[in-house]
Image 1: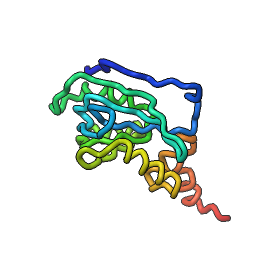
Image 2: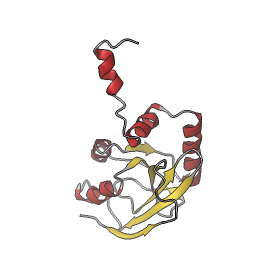
Image 3: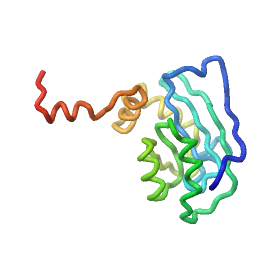
Length: 159
């Protein structure tokens, strides 16, 4: 099993801010999304809301091959618990299923996408009205089951 080799956790006086949504980026340098999810050597995790972006964690793994070895994903999936999304260059089918099972949305980005720009776009989306996957993630983050109204509608609830 692959383990984290180094980790930096950023602490400040406002770490208890529960309005921050956690998002992860597969990166080798903390600036650019340049890694395939399964073989990513590092992840930068940020807390984001419409007004604020905060680096929370930088984690590094040893070099990995894209060999289909499922054990390499265990530590990565554990690291991403609580994140709403992970941005990467690509994600294999098995990893995709496992990410969705822990309610982490995989997001494929173009080559050398800048983390700073992706964060700005995410903040703009939060301000202007989130897409469907982001709206669901926000509801899960708040502890609200987004499908609860589906069952009410199926039962014939009326206003």
